[in-house]
Image: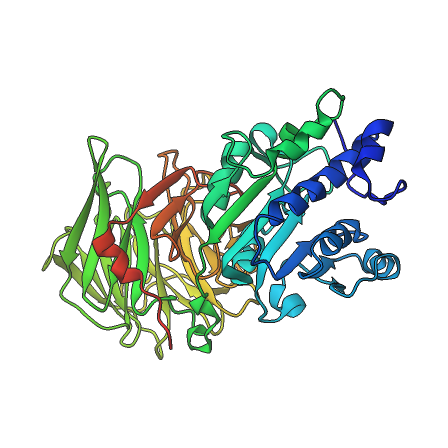
Length: 491
């Protein structure tokens, strides 16, 4: 069933009139606001609310009329809809703004609110992580999100029949996604959703609702200020002081596993799966200082990845023959002029082993196969115009050689290049939240490297097996003793 998402009340705001008439479109649009009004009545401390994607403003007005002590802000990207809302629904505690859900600060400034209402909006958003990051950053600590979106599928639908939708979620995928931003998800299936009785108004009619749009109430936002916003990171540095993440096939199984390096302590941490059990190995690498960056590659061409270290001040790399302290196999001068270059590892030029490549975040120049002084092919330029980017390398296709990618920290976009050549990105994937550490690897052993993040918010690696938007296929939680490495830098 396809419901017309654009709704202008023709019978006023009385839900019963639409139910009696059998108007599915009107009933479905109004019942969500009836539910919101009743659910919000359980929050006597509520003083401010944002209705995101308010359209012509009827729902914002219904909330403002029932809760006259609450300041309500209705936001929509449609200028004509906002103009109509201002004409039709004037109220002392209600204002309407033209705004973009991807640019929260431009719309709301630094203000925070007690509640955000988002009905039939998130499925229209391609950059869903930015959308929810903006929600939690503009909620109070005790704030809540009231959300509904089509959830009638067993798996996510990335190309829905409805052309305005970017993605339609399965219920499980939606809950998993929301749990990255809120500690409590109250939903209808388990009876935890407040005011479920509102939906009994549709019993005995042919008007579906709960399974059609699946309303949820999200509480206790997980807030994390994005350290990428600091001008100190315009050189492409990591969002924590001296922490880099990497991935490799440590045990020769064909499957990559994540790791991280804390340059403050000189400790590298790598995940192993021993008979299915997770084991985090900690190795002291004998170097300290925020100029050190960790990476991993099969330097010996033996089918197992080992660690490497790159010093951004000196341009020298240390490649390990074994994943152990004092196991440096080769020390290489990469012959770069100046500091600030960042390393990647890949199999360039059909080589039998991995080699180090370099990226200049200032010029967007790449120099691959820097295995020895003077080595490497011709440089090329690739990179979006976004301010802060992190270089990555891997096999994005069945090609024999590795290629490169960039993660744009503020938009949470991965920009993939399928060949080591200048030009625009071949694929762009939005995944993660601003402030996360990007990582790529072959998480399922199919020979293709795909996206992942290490989230500073929850201390987990969230890894996806295809280079498309969507939920994590694999999540690895860092032990508490290691999460301390991820303390954000507050310059």
